[in-house]
Length: 509
Image (tube, rainbow, N blue to C red; front, side):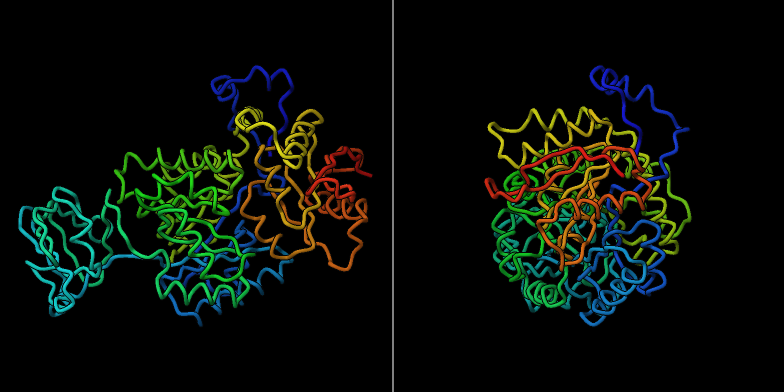
């Protein structure tokens, strides 16, 4: 992380003056990694050897994509990830990404790809008898209520928008459309209905099976696909059946964006899933939605993940494009806690290089962040009066700036205090000492939180001993040395108020 600015520099800084003084010669490669890197694991990365190399390069959370692979395949990934993490002595989170409710086309007659021409008419049918009769004039879609929800003039996109249709006429079980562009379509392609409110269930039968598997395997978090409203989050939680597993809501349609504030409040975190989102809303609006969602997460203290096509070209190339590096950097500058790789690590030729590059970019971007201004903006946006634990978190970050502390050490079993401190964007890492393994892994979602897992057979009231564990880890990382001062946050044991209620300054011995 970058050095602290002086108080005068902090108080007088604007974005323009701050950016004017940035230097490409500053070395930001040292110190702990503060932004999480989520990697989708697939054929290119499932082995213990490759997983080990990804973890060494910066992977913090493993993503299992339930759109691909059986439970046996996913279980192999889980076991391999846990072995690699144990061999390295690292805390690594594991997330299950649901397939979610989706709309797909049927089969083409004869199995051949069909070429559609701009201007031609095409009948989109929901009749089951048309499932395998796709062709030049007919396309089956497996959403029975399609004729009830679409409107004349609205668009239907097929295969990630490769084929665009405009609705001309609506019948009982069919929709007559005009093809807007030349495109070839094959079997079982995804269908998007931009700016249309759909009534699909939040949790499909496949999702229920996958979520049960998630709970059985003791995973840490679920990335819940196609969340459209707060009730969808509740449905996912009910299907999991384990309230200790985090639910990260993926926002990938117009309805989800419109209901975002309410969704964010009931979620444990948010993923800005730009793939389907970029089809469901106009492409030029995606960055607007991204900034709105990440900023809302920052204000509520919820972890934000930015995903999809971040280093897409590294699936086949050893170096990213300049636009991709800027995309990752801007996501971090927007306030994203984590950035995510998909095909780059699941099937790409250069999975380790992609993780290492993302680590370099996110480190550089975080070092360029105007942290003091972020602290003040979040602070002044909070309602009054604040709960005691948030006052403590806010004060700890202020003290860290005033003392130019290289680290904050937190004793937290739920992880809440670490997340609250991160909300105020300290310039230093937050060493979160906990005895609960899942808490340690879930903290990897949150910017600057470095989990320190302590043995359970300790005296929980030995605060100095537990703080020493966090300081020892900071010493190992090279973050602190003898004589430096760190900020320490924990409960005083009086139980006068819930959560942490004490902040102190400790000199490292």
